Image (cartoon, rainbow, N blue to C red; front, side):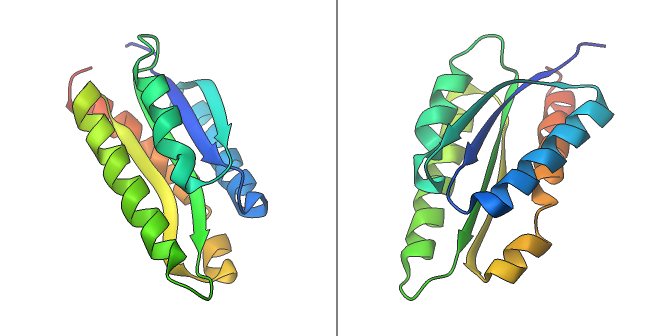
Length: 137
């Protein structure tokens, strides 16, 4: 069986949370015997799509996982960030015909809820691998 190579794009914003998501992703990749071949850290979730695009252009990357935590603030900024990032990430997956797993939590989430959702790092790896297998890649 082919050993899949994943790219990982993770947000530095709320790094106390995203760092735990990254560790969960790495552990799951090791468990599933897939490689996280390349990692790009971006300032925030809104910046994820540009890094995803670069990874999808890399012929050595089979799929990409995205990790981030968008925590609710005093404005609706979290809604805007998630809406635009998630739409562009989905568009890129379709454009490049490669899976991109959405491991970004939020919007409307408290810091405590974000900590409760750190396993989304693990889940993103699971989704990427399942999609690769189901697409026969």
